[in-house]
Structure formats: C-alpha cells, structure tokens
Length: 321
Image (cartoon, rainbow, N blue to C red; front, side, top):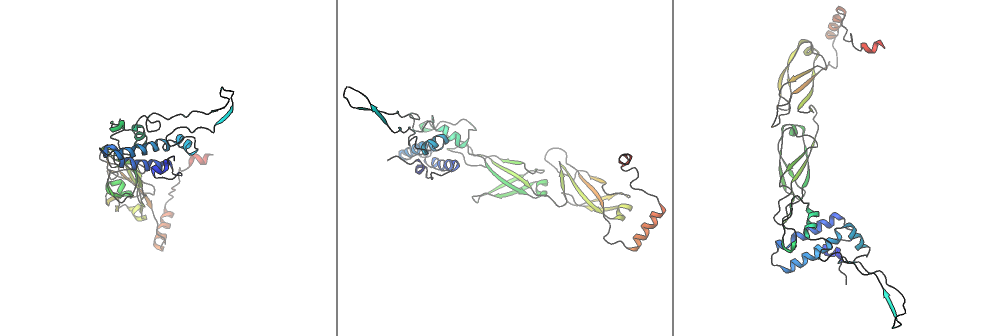
C-alpha cells in the first residue's frame, strides 16, 4: 500500500505550507542523526520524514502528489495504459505506456542533500557544515519578531523593559533613549534556537510609542504648549514648566504673546551619542471663563487711552488684492 506522506509528517492534507514546515522542523530536530548518534532506527525515520518533506515542502511537487501524478517516492504514476492491435509474430497484443521518471537517485526527492531542505527552512546566513549522511549540520535559528508598546516617556528617556513571550517566557529589553515609533531593536541571539549546535537567531523588537497628552517629539527636540494668564503675559512671571526630565522654573518675559516660543536648552532627548535636544515651550494666553467688572473696566479704559491695533500690517498683501 502506498504511504501517505501527510501522515508521515503528522499533518492533514489541508495543512498550510507553514504548518508543513513546522511539522518537519519539529521531527527533524527530534530525529536528526547528529542528535541521535548510532541510532539506526532514528536515522531511517529521519530519511523517511525528509523524503516526505522533499515532496510536500515543494508546492509544485505537492500539487502533483495531491493530483495523483506522482507517488510517495516522487515517481510519476503511469497513465492509464492503452493498446492497439499489432501484428506480431505471436499474433497477440502489445501494450504501450509511458515510463516513469524518478525525481533523483537520492532518498530526498530531488534535493541534492539535506542542506537544501534546511537551507530553505532555516535560511542560509552562513554555509552549513556537513553532517552525517551528507546532510546539513550546524544551522542558524530563525529570527523571532515581537512588538513592544512604550509610553512616550519610556521611549524618550530609555530604560529596561520586560516583555512576556507567547510561550510564557520573559525577555529583558534595553530600550535606548530616543527610540522612535516604528523603530526595530535587534537582540542578538535571542531568537529561535539553532540546529545541531548552530547559533541562535535574533529577536527583532518593533517599537510602538503611545502619544503623550503634553509632549510632542520633533527629532530630538520636545515641544510643549504652556497656558499662561493675562497678567503673566503682561507683567512677566516665573512659572513651573514640565519637561521629560522633570519640572523646571522658566521666566516668562513681560509682554509675552500667544504663539511665542521659548527654549529650554538641553531638556529634549538625550541619546548616548551626540548633543541633547532642546524643549520648546509655546505660550498660550488663556483668559478666565468669567470676566469680572474690575478687569472689564480696566481693559476698557486702556483701550480708550490707546489706539493699539494688533493687526496693523497684518495680511497687507491680501488687502491689496
């Protein structure tokens, strides 16, 4: 009876390409001769599993196998035979059929050796060392990808962050100061395990930064809008201003206007290399929700004494049109 290659790998005939690769990888790790020296039964089973993957791991070969065009060994199945009368010396009938075509002399269905299988599966970051049976020996593990969400201040200032992996293990990540949204951090050797003593893959951590209610980032600079009162704008004042490194006292000059920007030097992103960024504070004059009579009378008297026009010269080009 013809062997069912899907059963050999322990998957259904509707399994995805990725499921087939995972099933093969699991079995290959368990059965590889390098890990089972002297175990002939394991070596034979490894050949059987590899031969199955040689067909099911190739889309074209798998399609032929599913359609019944090739058998479990990779040989073409003969088409239904046909015959015709042929006047031979014996007066009988002769049958004609297409001969089968093998996929290679080795046991792996067209692969020259196992390095092709492991090369496709693990990726060839370096040339494989030859192991027993002419197969691949040391193979680098695959890179693992994770996503890490950070608060704005965590990304700006950096620090240590621990993430929990899908299988329950944890991984400590050193977040550099100034890491940006969408940036990827590479942790060497923290990916999937290598094969037969090969090096581990890397962990690739994609960073997602949550926005902040006060701060916005502009390169290495930080921007902040600061509400100030009418009297602070007119008379000037010293006020406390938040920064990503903690609060500082800033002097507001007398006669400040909304939209005016003040700089706090060195209060921006501080990366390990290069000069630190600055923090820019944009002033916004905010009036009280209720204007009392004293303020109204004072402003009215001031307006009557002056002819100040805040729009003098403003939009002059537009007015000429």
